[in-house]
Length: 146
Image 1 (cartoon, rainbow, N blue to C red):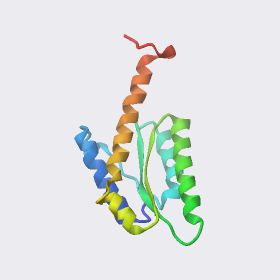
Image 2: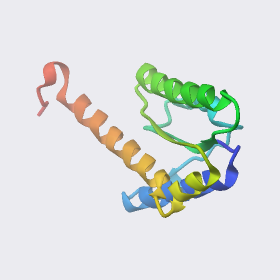
Image 3: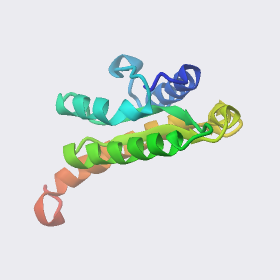
């Protein structure tokens, strides 16, 4: 959980936890780790993935565009870094970090009139857990094991 825009991150977390509960996973099975911001998300995800404890990781938070190119660097680093963690470790990293031009856009996507992107990150995490499990069951060559 990127804590820079904490209210947005908390709303995304609530959406994710509610969606996971709908999928049968209780909040007591969800670990929440707060980090300073989205730029730190890949390093945190890599450390958590390396524990072997997690089937998936959801990075939730918001980056709001400012007056400089900082927004572009942070968004690019977070997106590519999380993708790299997933590819390198086999632990899917759902990208639930909002990249918005304004705080109003972030609020609209964190439980406002555009829905809650936290629940979409939870859906992605569950889908990838299921897909990777099915792929492991297929075994080499794609044939399903009986």
